Length: 490
Image: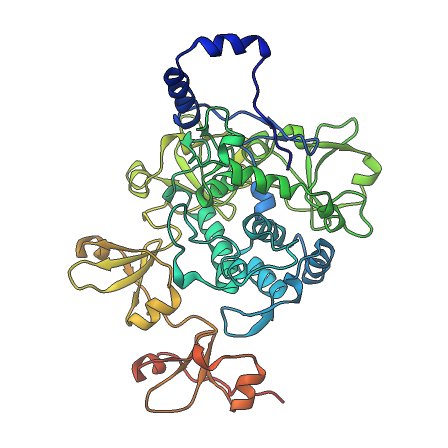
């Protein structure tokens, strides 16, 4: 990284010599430590021929393109970057021993987060793509999850696999619950400042207005200009070009393009070209300056894919019409009461034309403040429920709560509020959980709601399970899960 020295013209030296030293010191103190606010500006990066816009770091599509790299491409990438991560093995969250690459890939597919995104995060936080001699702590706090400024990291999130898993989960959660966080698309918010930020923030404090969900998510994870500029810089490494174009394709995956002489814009993704039928949809996540002109003959070699649409849970409004929440190509009307109950702000609403929503099917109104799910506790009975939409699913045992939702925030509500939701089935243990009872040595693994008995100790160990991951449950919890076929290796 290049360093720059601050200097002043020689003609000013005599003036400085005539100023009392205490006044000079006071002025310097203000210059260095006063938290003046300023709007974010675009910085020219001296190391690469691109400009860093603090309000737009990567697109939503780039963050969620979970098919951007396969496992073998990730392994090849890690070999090329020179670090030791590809050689290391760790215990994954399911108790099995896997390579670092396998763990990253598993998390990317489970939470539908771009594998490249997770690799860049690892490099930003601990330099693990290039580090030839990483420490144990570098691995244990690989993604910086719960590593907050001026405080000790949260010990229960220590470990490579849990760091990867929770980081991927957290970014997916940001996308699906944007209204729960300080940084939001379209909302002015002040960043935090440390000594690193002063290198790039003109007056040592900045107001950013994220242009999309991905940028807002990055600031919620690390609310610093320096950290997010570093992420952006790593994202634009030249080396990535080796893995983001198909062997027989001339246009890199993830490119925004238009054919020479034509106006239509396409996103190249998964070997297909996806059209933008709406200017509003495009501007929600992208910039026209990112669109490249390509030969029409090259573009014609791609099959047409699904049209681009707004991200899930976007709030849109046609003039003089209802506000809608968009979920899976359906538009759900949302009332002013529910809008306020969820905690939305008016500036989060996207003004659209009726043509922007022509491909969306009108669906049922959003009638719950928890459209994407939440844990609620009856403040009278202390019972806990998982509530999604209009249905509450009881969690009948603390072991299920701790196993399925170890990082969940429980919201205390009145019995009257809970009574407004319909009753659903009891929540069972999540798939992959290893269980037994205190009275019986038999061990089971939960799969699709059933408990599968494990044939032998050898089978248990051959499958990569760890004995310390087995939890003891009551007979009642065991019997909630019907017994399935025995799990054994032929």
